[in-house]
Amino acid sequence: MKAEAIAAEQGIPHKFLEGILGDLRRAGVVDSRRGGGGGYRLAREAERITVADVIRAVDGPIVSVRGERPTGLEYTGSARPLLPLWIALRANVRRILEGVTVADIAADALPAPVRALAAEPAAWENP
Image (cartoon, rainbow, N blue to C red; front, side, top):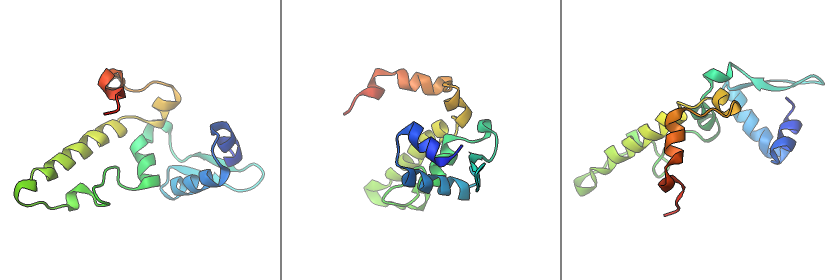
């Protein structure tokens, strides 16, 4: 697809989308071809591209604390329990994002565990 068509369909600025597509291309998520018949396409099957792949390509690490990966943190004393807390948070976020593929989204077929979490009323509350 051409970037212009994607931008129009999704209602986002073309230049903004070009930046995202560039990140995705550098990460090997999409391929691009120049010219009249050019555009962007997935670099591999949609079933093999996870939401985590896309987020990492565009934003970097999925979970960071003060800009650092949790594994790079160190806490002492009474703050020591924070490290396993951040690691557990990262593990849960990764479990969800690595378990959902582009194909799942395209088919409107999120995995059952994701649907179950989203169905919990508390998930929709703003604390």
